Image 1: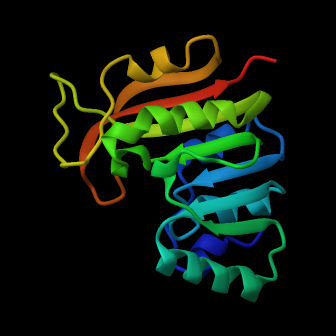
Image 2 (image 1 turned 60 degrees about the horizontal axis):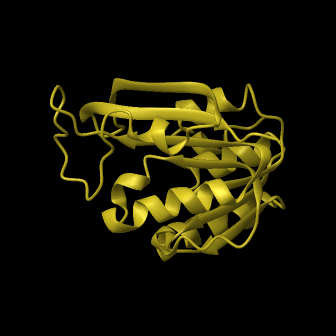
Image 3 (image 1 turned 135 degrees about the vertical axis):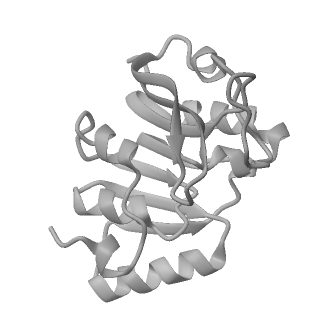
Length: 187
């Protein structure tokens, strides 16, 4: 498998997406906030049917150029503002890594509910989001951060394959606490 991310100078796929793919067989996947396509390209190469959405037209245009140059047929790009929380299809896997913290805080609950509603029974949601806690105040002024235990409470009733609130480092070097969850929707 050609490493398209390296070939095009794109950040490698998120480590949690790579890990999730050890549990999830190729299916329809939504890459929420795809940006330059680091996760979308990786998922497409594994055989997933990828819908990649973002509100950044320049990022989508750059990714479209790669898709055309590489003749990739399993990535569908869409301009979409995640704050709308109005998905129009159901997915076996929804990936939302380091994206929620850039959304309107008043819309995050609706976005998460929409993700859950548009996940097929037995499907998966992957979320990685910055936290702001007393022990580890967030050093970056994101519009939204999760609180301790908040994500687990929202996904109560789902099977937790992974759930932690560990310290991590963003690709820009900032160290902060992240809530990470891979959950499977009940059948």
